[in-house]
Length: 88
Image (cartoon, rainbow, N blue to C red; front, side):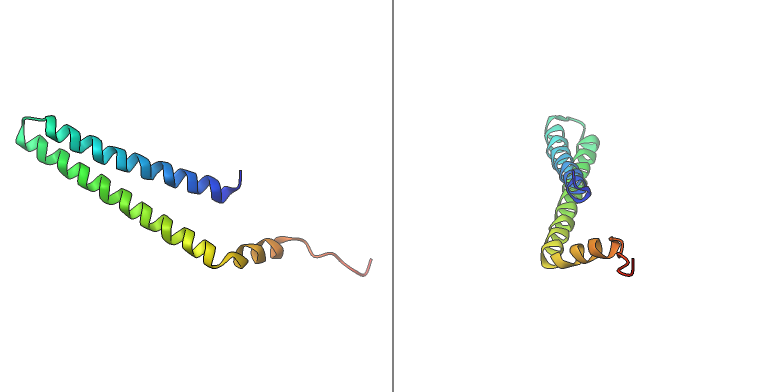
C-alpha cells in the first residue's frame, strides 16, 4: 500500500470516529437527567464535531493541493533515483 493512501485512510478513520462520538455524546445528553452532566456531554459533542470538521477541511485542502501539483511528486521520485555514470 502506498504511504500516502495509508495516511489518508487513517485520517478518514479518525474523521469517522470524531463524527460518531459527536452523535453518541449528543444522544447521551438527551438520556441524562442531571443538568451538569448534560451540559458536559453537549460540550463534548460540540468539540468532537468541530474536530471532525477541522480534520475534514484539512484533508480537503491536502487532497486539492495534491491534485493541483501532481508533478511535484514525480519530480521528487526522479530526484531520488541514482544517476547512472555514462563513462563506464
